[in-house]
Image 1 (tube, rainbow, N blue to C red):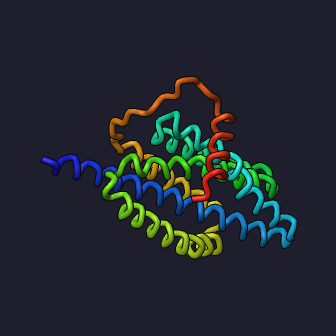
Image 2 (spheres, one colour):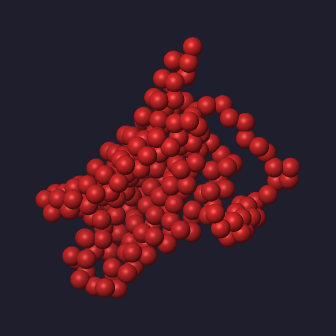
Length: 222
């Protein structure tokens, strides 16, 4: 009697992990390609500092709001929207860079936009995984996901460097486009379980929720 539900959640997890690693590979490849490309073109420590800030600071800032959005809205749809946002704007700015204006600031804009998308996708994805996985299997599934992530983080710089050296940075953006839409297609196939979310007695905005979350975090050392 449990065969159908078991098969269903395993299929969902397969779609989810594959999609997440598609996104991870594409994003990592683009990040490394942008850093190396800027380093080769500018040979400037200042530009490298700006590139590093562009890839990290937006993600840190937006992740505070992304956690509250994850509790309010459909997590799968949030992942899809974040991926669409980063992919569409990445390709648009890349086209502008190659055909209109070869300013390195445009590459920093791509890095910042992708950082925003990652800042939303990471907490949302981390909260969606337990929603799709039975409690008894959560540790094992999370281990599989983390192992796959670690392998891709090792492979993506090598692949990104090879593509950048042989085909150019635009090829990296095209591969990111392919992996992103592949991941979105897999997310669409996921069937979300019916979960009753606890609604607060009083409607609160994102900022009060963020403050409450930070107080809880710093007030509980565990």
